[in-house]
Image (cartoon, rainbow, N blue to C red; front, top):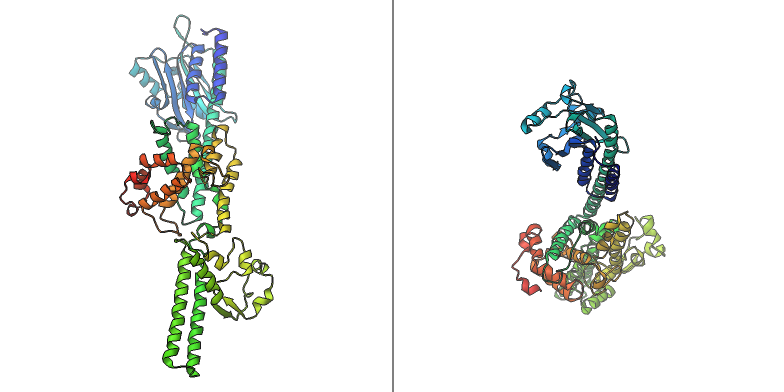
Length: 562
């Protein structure tokens, strides 16, 4: 019997519809909807069974007014164990909720224990344990917009005005079926949200692992930066007295930062591996120091031949000629070893070093007899404007900047690359590497993130900016950057410096890493407040103990690095 006024019922229905469409908690909507339907039917109890996408039947809400119980969530497992529906398709008899879920039947009976084709042992056990008496029952399936069963609504013991248990009338059945249709919308919305989240998480995971797998030397960078980011962001939120005492992050902020930290380098998908992994200045697909070594081998052999020829012609004494030969060989050895040291890139070159490279290039030459045009691809031949000059023997420098080398993508000139003052990357290659952040921004802008996750682009796209405005790609200052973006900048730097899998540098001790970061803070690269929090909160050590090799962790006095 209906005990509520029509206006009140309508008001409650509208409120539930608004909740279902506005993204309120599905558990709350289930509780409110079932309670309202129970009130309309004047039933003593109600139950909602959820059919999961993987075909499990779970009781997620139960309420019995006379027992003063109302339970949501997994606590209902003690009343009704989870059932895997495909396993019970051939089971006979089935419980009421199982029948509704599998056969899509509607059960409306004045006494459930009088139904011979329905299994009711669990109801009898419940009644015995709770001194209760289940009689009338209404149970029906709930379908989504694609007509898939997503739940079962069940009501027991309808009562008349005198409190006597009666059956559920057809009119009441129609009313509460309409009310419970709200659950269809709410559950389907939740599933769509979960599917979207799973799809996004899968995309993030695949993209990050693809970037890491692209290079054997940055294998876990995209997976470790999120760890440092989360640790430092947590320290900022927990700060109660320092610069971040008023800093807070919502659930959406945390999720946006999580996605951004995983995808911060997704633009590297367009960066060639031979640039990303360039461990020496002359390295392209291979280290061209070996070509230069061959030229020095030629020069040494030429010097030996010249010595033997002079001996045969008795041009000088044996001792004098030997001394001349040894002097030439020693000079060649010193020059080649110097070139080799320049190629490594771990020490900055001085003006004197640059001058010496130029001098070697001008003074040391050899004669090439075989054509440079043989064995070239079509693309390589296109870069050579005067192929006839390469067909004939020619005197060439041991360090070359041939026109086709300079015109090649990312400048492959030998002398040009050897003269890189610091590191192994030339200007063209640096520009290509820097493009990855622009590509990251473009990729993320093209993904249809909801408004509450719009910060992902800013968080991920600013991790190479500097607080002094000298970063890239947009030259943002610290005031123009959000705190999460500046947190990611520190996380990116710390992971790169502590990594031991980079081909262009030896693993660094923790003290050396912190000293470098301290200099970056002092020079306007890193945010000073966040860097101080990074040290004082111990985030650097918390990460190090778990993810850095023990032989890299040396004795640290944090005060020395503030």
